[in-house]
Image (tube, rainbow, N blue to C red; front, top):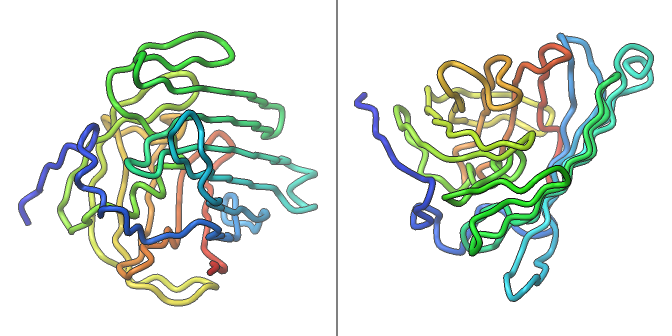
Length: 236
């Protein structure tokens, strides 16, 4: 099938109006495995609208923690908060508290699109286009017109830098997880063969082909090995 290139860095018109496949107060829970072994759990939540400087926002919260066994091997306690605007789903503020083994990161970033800068707890960085972080990306992804063979481009901010990425829709697959069985699109963000997170390997996301567009399964390679997140439940 001929690949279709759609530039999404600036054009919010590809978002499905204001009728998103998710609602405020939605919670997604996941079981997490590291290097095949059950390792803990994670969650993605989107909160009620907040108003900041006249801009209506969603608050996305990601949390991941290891179980008692993995706490003895490689403990993880990650909490990420991302504030995104309700119109284009671009990131407005990001706060990360990462604790993974001996690695720690505390990042805060405020996005000023009028001034064209991102101010972090380390420095100020110029920016040209709307950007998304790796966690709000999942919600933006759910609004896109996915089609097998489709190729999208966008900009991600993480770890104090911007990265221009592409994302390809590989195929469709039926995936069975604790939350149920889903017909999914398999998508993969990449940049010159490198991954979305940390540029250390491949990442794939399985998005349900239904009205909810759920991120049913996420597989990525990180500093601590291969990480798999499978949906266990979602509400409402």
